[in-house]
Length: 593
Image (cartoon, rainbow, N blue to C red; front, top):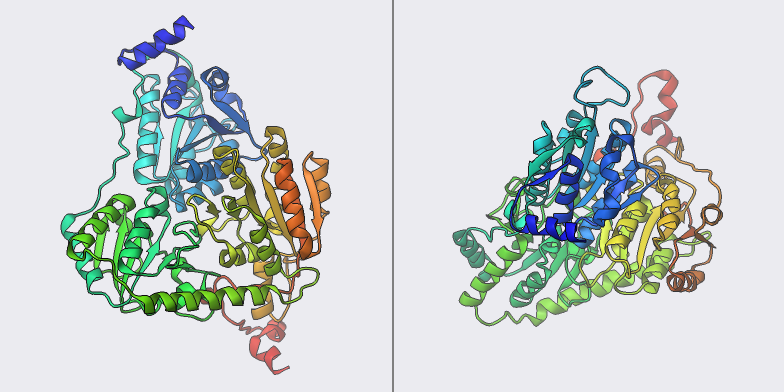
């Protein structure tokens, strides 16, 4: 105990310490408030691994390294603290490529500790050697290479600094022999090498934005992930109220504006809210806060080309690369979503002290929302065999407590959920986003549960995506992580099957799935398992599972013919065939028949 206090005192007073590289790494992680590391153990970092329990850092072993980075991604989104993952050099690290790429697209700070081949053998194509830096270069904000034992802590500090500053994953590559040896270095506190303060935007540009908003007839707000990460949603709400401006949320960020607010119109993007789309298309000024206005997230949906062509756009984003990247703007403000919004609100109140009173606008918003809510219920109540997937989503969202964190995968039902998921608190919606990989939702749910142990956490997963993540039920059982997997089982890769229905005359190639009962598989792994084939049973099962607080899998059988429209109508065309042997597959040919 005395030795520990002496070390703390030396750290606090900035004195150099004699350490092994492993000790320097772990002490830097302690200063960064890292409490968990996700991965699968390997000989490459065994020396560091041995220190973690004493340091108070829990190593959470997964069944596949892809899951580790998905867990860290969601943990970060919920907690705000950068997640950390690690794996064996070579295959352990390359197994994380998909999930690190997903975190990169999601702007999630994360540090990937990447042991690599030892310095004496680099370049000999030895056992488990890979050029990990090159592999990860395009899917991380930076690849930081440790070149000497004396630099291990410095390089790790750099990794965290860039991860937080640029909002994305960073690879910390360290040859495996550099965990050993000795060095003298100071262990710095985070405030000594990085800052959490963000810019509030150019005052002149904020004033320009205020002038546009003051004179707008139909201003509309889009609130995005940046507003959530900056804890700025309350300020966005105040701006909306001051302007009497309807507020939509960006694609798959349904927690970026409280759904129960009278000015909330819901999500834009694929399978979003018609209320949001019908409101947005008439905007003359669009205030986009903390969103890059991605191409996919602003595509037409439900045959509504809703993104306004002539609106003057004010875009606030922390990353200058995102300003005007996809849509021409009138004012671009580089700044933290919260800080810039606070500055904007302050100036608005100066030039326009009294909030805009627009009862007609509020009535229009209420009418659009009411019509859309009724349509969602009507669509859900169409009978299905055995259950209409929309009905299952409706019953599920009605049964869950308001503070529930919900992760969603990629797929037909998971995407349809976008229309049904409503949140009144931030950091509740954890979606796969635009990288669009399957197998995201379940490990993400586990990471979210670790971030908030007492909050209900539910994963919405299709049976196709479930095949890529069900092995992690063992992790949930082993670690006692009480997430609920709602597996919507329609025995198909349904998003792609819908393409084959609409574009390929019901010729199904590779889209049908044969699988065991997932509830029974879950039971064999030590989790709770339930089979649901009646919509009336969903509420009771959900309440029972919430009370038991154990890992659970709900195998919900849904109708495989009740499918949402294709993801990418812009990327699909009716088939044309020229060779005689394929002529019968030509669209014109089978249309005539």
